[in-house]
Length: 513
Image (cartoon, rainbow, N blue to C red):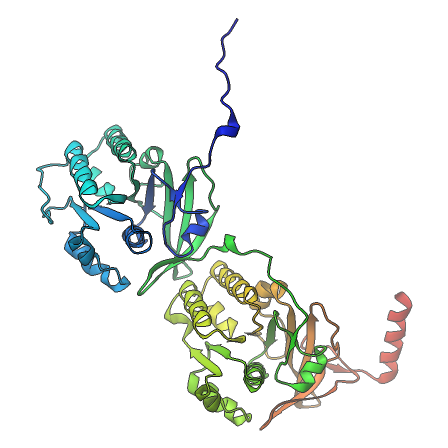
């Protein structure tokens, strides 16, 4: 007979408590923070923001949760760390003086009354760490970077043994700790020695990708022992004045509210074509070649809201603020006066000045600050050219979800690559998540160029399905009658067809139906 151990009752187990990082978006990805009382290994190549994340973890603990911290440094002197982190608004030197932040200096020149040892004796290091924790009453610890300490060891077994020794000591003390380690490449071995990740309870990877000559940062949780977490890579950026901000796409849900309230597009005839205007919580994509009137339609949308007393926000990425104001004036819309009244705000930036993650954070902050009743982006195609396909789709998902959650109508413009028709790559990325699509096209007939407009899609509403002529004059966009006896407009190959032939084709379709 074989003796077996009795099974422990599973219902008595409790979920592992987590400690909020206080880092924007990261608590969504970690589903509540890092496991409390455990060690998290933070791996990344040079420039991936390991030190910034570690400092922000401690700074947030002090500032937001009244939890003091200890920073063990093996590379940068404490004075340099204080100076480098000042731009994020973290007064580390003041916190040191207030006994809220303590440094354990493992560099060549120890500071803050730390006794220097001749070599890296981990027993002595742990003793110094315990003394610092006791002195400031710390509950958060960061060690940056353990790889520089182990560079003197050739034997991986020694590295693993000493790392295990440190992890056990930190758990015994009862603190929540982050250990940073260098990676040699963005993919492959998770740490320099290939053993660090097996010792730590949790492993988080920071990457600084180079894709299509563009850099983008991502964070991935490789493992969280005993608890759940978000899967996959999540983009993040470093924001001056505040630190790291993660864009948690996993937090996006299809739970936005919906209503039947309509808002004007700013054009009476377009409102009629859309069945009474745009829905208040809708995203409208305006697609067309350069010069077809996309910016004009955006201008009318903004002016239409402002004329009703609504606050409107316009993001421009192709024309300067002065150009947009001049254009609006030529169409009879006085943006300068509306701005003085506080009804509109126009924000213009070159797409290339920063990554799409930075644009996303900046735009969402503008929306939070101005609290507009409608938003327009002109144009998405400019942002698309300045990013990778993956980064661009993440931007679109994040912005559309953010706007729809606030029930703000949004108009986004996109430029087609050809003058006479075709679809932009933008449409492939965003068309499925937009509520309405308006197409603007050039039409060449008998040696003359005409402009055409049609409402291709309008969720939850009947709409005009004809292709209408329109002209642009000093009053803006004037939509006229629909094209008759013309086929092939949307494909870019318009052709005249006699009325008798059109009638014959209509009859054929009716018979098939």
